[in-house]
Image (cartoon, rainbow, N blue to C red; front, side, top):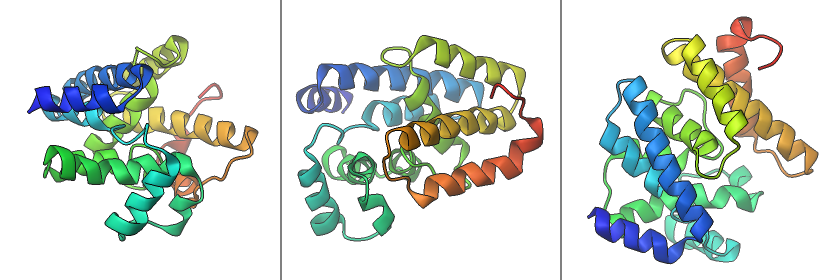
Length: 201
């Protein structure tokens, strides 16, 4: 039940991460309404997307290698910041008994993304980056402006292109490992929406 999920998250996440999760849930619900997706499902996916975020890196690594064992690439183990998405999808099934594949997929792909994400995947991916509780308000407003100015799923793609571009810049600046999958997402979006992009995106 939702009460159990909220109690578990409060116990296992930092205060800031819980606040982020609530913001992501509300933002995902808002985006779901804009793109004709299931709002309650989007809220739930947003709420639990970071359920594994505050586990120690070595604990997450053990869960991935010893319990999950399949369905991930070696490149995803080169940066500990990506562990929680793999483990989070697993914990959503194990701890919260969530069998809905759309929710599991959205949690699994919310960090690195993947080429040809579904609209539901994209909503959770984006909500994570622009929720109002802990993310930069100026940046979030910019993203919502992109969505308002570009109707339909194409607007989502342009918005995600911007977030992927910023992620790549941030990772490079901090000299962190960049998963090839993230670069694949970037390239696929350049092909899809490149001719619609202006300079400040």
